[in-house]
Length: 252
Image 1 (tube, helix red, strand yellow):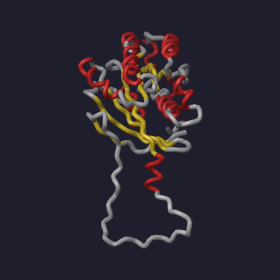
Image 2 (cartoon, helix red, strand yellow):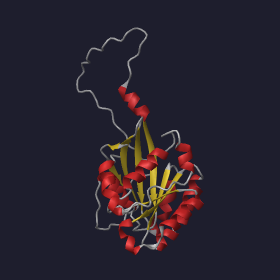
Image 3 (tube, one colour):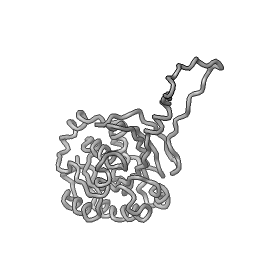
Image 4 (cartoon, helix red, strand yellow):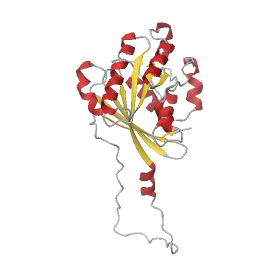
């Protein structure tokens, strides 16, 4: 199980930006006496221990305009959904710390614009990513057709050294579905990527998505290499009405 820490946000960031914790400065010239340390033992440095434990991973969100990339990130970060659509301009950056069983990781979330005029910016953000989340709208077949191109772009920049997740969003609009779960599962299997269906609006499978990504990151658990290299079907048969138990039962 995971629990969130406070999020830090910024927008229109460059691909080389990263979250930095600035050390606090002393307000006095007097220093407190140091506690004695038994001979042969060294005192641990809490700051250095935390820095050593904290691993940062870059997640880039890709997909056509209006697929729901920003809404997925907003639901994960704040547990909310904004029904007023506003297209992402350029690139937005947010980050969130997750506490896993034996370590802490910081997920750096890069939200890319889906419009064609911003496509030239995207390769530089893919280049050093650990995870590519390719999102399509289950009610828009064209957005699903585009996922092949997005995944090709990821592999052109990163080869096989990246985790790719295919995400079918907007399951709350199941009555307007144009892409079946079975068809998307087959594509994920053929391409060797992970797959899940979500609803950013209802919160369905959103926490599960990020939890599974965190668990598949390099070094996150004993099976991470196998998880990253295989297609995983994550609760895709659950109904959107099951979103409430997920929200209350998971603290990631």
